[in-house]
Length: 154
Ligand SMILES: [Zn+2]
Ligand SMILES: [Zn+2]
Image 1 (cartoon, rainbow, N blue to C red):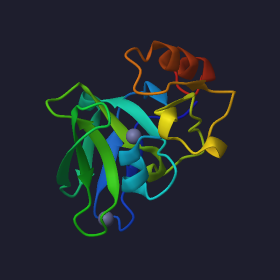
Image 2: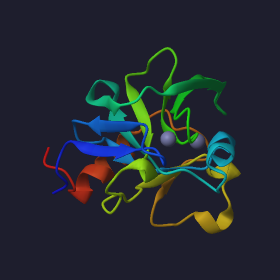
Image 3: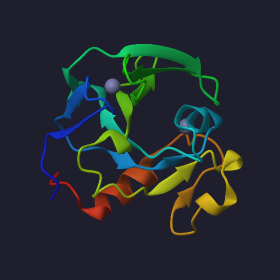
Image 4: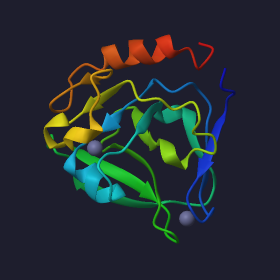
């Protein structure tokens, strides 16, 4: 079992955070914003309750944009190194997408599915994962599959 809280931070270490409850899921996002933000083919966020997330050190800068599905999103990033920590909805949707590569321990992160496959690189997809062309309206299949991985005591 992965112990809680989960901890992580940005590249330079100015921002440090804690996540006090088990994540709901881990997946890959192939949207065009994630491609530009990370400079790679996709991002692998973990979804956590906003109330379970707190910065333990540092104050993030905030940047807002409109998602590929037309909703307003915000990102928390480090003002020193520019590293992105997490994204959320504005107004709040109750959950955050934490960029899993910022975790101190990334060994347990295994994405259960892919979203925005319409803008994915073909080589980045796998038939082992659930895929959605765009943003799914219901993430229940992701949540259920993540729970079956059994990484966290629930
Ligand atoms: Zn930093
Ligand atoms: Zn995305």
